[in-house]
Length: 280
Length: 120
Image 1 (cartoon, each protein chain N blue to C red):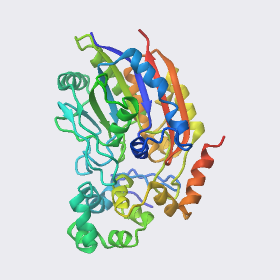
Image 2 (cartoon, one colour):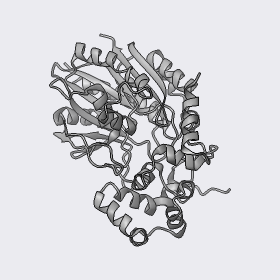
Image 3 (cartoon, one colour):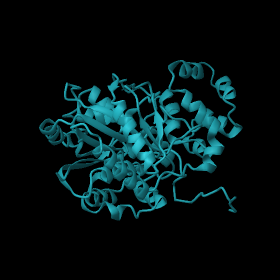
Image 4 (cartoon, chains in turn purple, cyan):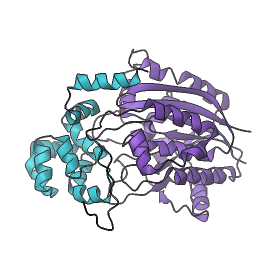
C-alpha cells in the first residue's frame, strides 16, 4: 500500500524563482531563507518519495474569476508551466500520475468533497517555486506530481476546518492506493503577507510562529480560527495558510518535526519552511 | 451601509476583502488583466491602452485608475491584486513598488518597513 512519509511546507513567493535563476543562494538578503533548504534536501535524499502531492493556489494562470473552483485536483500526464505576465523563467513540464489522481478524485467525491477534476492544468509559481526549492536539480529522484489547487483568490475561501478535513480525506485516499509507493505532501504559500490596500506590507511574526508551533501537535486548535480573523492576523494573502492545513490533515494524527526555518522578509512575506515526518 | 442579502462584506482596516461585491464590480478590469498572461496582449495594451480598455469594457473609474496607475483606485474599482500584478508587471513595478504606492512611501522606505518587521 502507499505510504505518506511526511509533509513539506514552504512559501512560494515569485521572487524566489528569480533568485534561483540568478543563483543568489549566498546573497546576504537571500541566505537566511535558502539556508532552510539543505536539511530538507537531506531528508528527501534519505527518503526518496515516488509521488509529491503539491497543494497550492492558482494566482490567475489556470483559473479566472469566470469559473473559480474551491478545490481542484490535477489529473494530467504532465503539467505545463506558462507565462504569468511578469517575467519569471518558465519551467519545463512536470510529469503527473493521472491514475493516482483519479483514485484520489473518486475517494474525495465518495467522501463528499466535490472537487473539480482537471485533465489540463497549467501550473503557476505557487507550484513551480516549491518544486524548484525542493528538487533544484530536477534529477531522477524528482517525484511525479499531483497538483491540488485551493481558492484563496476570491472570498468566500474555504474555512481552515474544511481545509484540514479535506487533507484528512485525501490522506485516507492516498493510503488506500494499492501500490507500494512513498508519497510526500507539500503545503505551500504563506505565511503572513498582504500585497493590497493601505495595510500593504503587513507581516505578523507572532501569528506565524504560533501557526508553525501548533501545526505540529495541535492543528485542530488552528481550525478554530475564522476566515476573517485569518485575514486580519495573517494579512489578505496570508490566507494561503489554509494549504498548510490541507497538508497537515493528510499526514495523520501524529507527526515529528524534522526541521524548520522562518525568515522575514522575503519580498513582502514571512517565509516558513518545515519538514514534518508522519508516524510509521 | 445597508447590505443586500447576498452581500457578506466585512470591514478590516486597510484591507478590501475581495468578495462577491468586489468581484462583480471589478470583473472587466480583472478580465483585462488576466489577458496579460499572453505577451501579444501585453503588446496590444502598450500600443494603445485606451482601445484595449474599451475592448474589455472597463468602467470610467477603472479606466481612470489604470490611466493614473493608481493601485488603491484600481482596488476600489474592484481590482484583485493577483490580476493587477500582471498589469503592474507591464510597467515594471514590483510588489514593493506597488506596496509603497499604496502606503504613501518611497520604495526604499517600504522595503525598510519590511526589514523592520523581521527584527525581533
